[in-house]
Image (tube, rainbow, N blue to C red; front, side):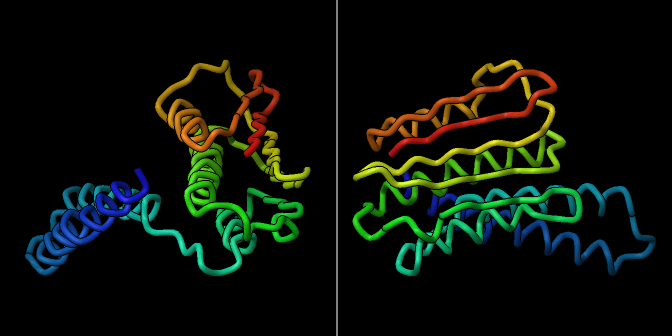
Length: 183
């Protein structure tokens, strides 16, 4: 799955995004400039870049705790506060690359959903290690939802099952979103 995602990511970036950018450049140099078409192309370019970024290779050779911390803090901005607890204190060395990749992708999905849908202003992601198990608690103060598993949540469940872990979701409208991952 990881190899397929990486291959698709590279293809989207190398072929689609670059072609769209080339067309945008051509349009910018033509007279008269068609602003609405240029805006539409920019949206397409941004989407393809985001798809590529979401599925790009993950550097698992460096300190994985810091890699996760960097991922989570990338969602921080003037509106959203992201708090991480203990990601760098977990002993990630015995964790397989497959499990690390799965954890990374699940957290990325949760953070992307938060940013797109929740209107959250505070996100907390706490890590703890109990024997050989790693427990990750995610919570935000966003809009919450009636839990129905669309593609994103279903994908996270499928991913976690492939590595023998579990994930639970807890949310109510106007009361935030919570998830617990155990690997």
